[in-house]
Length: 275
Image (cartoon, rainbow, N blue to C red):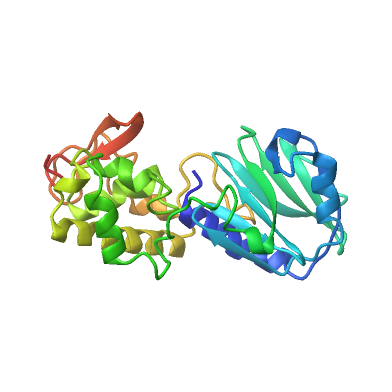
């Protein structure tokens, strides 16, 4: 958390506030967030004077397009961006501040300090870590049924583990995998190479549909997620199984259960998702 819909919502919100503005100064209060270059002063120097032209997304990564580079940011569990007047008090857990040419500040806040930032040359964006091993985004044209079927049939891992693998498909996380498998009627412990063609097609279709619905709702707020304006997502009202354990399934009335799959909390309807 945040997953693809939350990152997409943050991207869309931030674009309205920072595109066209120039980074005049950078302050870093928690150096471990900066991964490339590994020297914080070099990181600050690369960004100085760079104008933000666009914000893109790949999977769960935000890609700030600058004059000469991309600033690649992963929010991990609790990372947040927000824009504030320079005179406004800096809250606790603010670890990176980008001073903008308008007198505002783009602030990165992260309670758990797990987020990462890389500055990459534009022509190296997908040639180096952290993006070089990512699979296609579910919204990418490359996420075809042929591509997905080939990946699925190659492994005997359980399907939940495959869908969480960012090298197979980028952007899906625990919430949306549980919801996707419920809607597709597939148990998360089913081996991927045992899936039928119809099940594979249903999973792909429902992954795309679920993510689109979540984007429309501004993402899912389970604990602390808010967009760039501090607004909660609303997709949690549409959840069928995730965080619904011990409640009745909306489809069949059976009790939703919670189990562990690969160490991840997993929500299943035993009626709609027969093992």
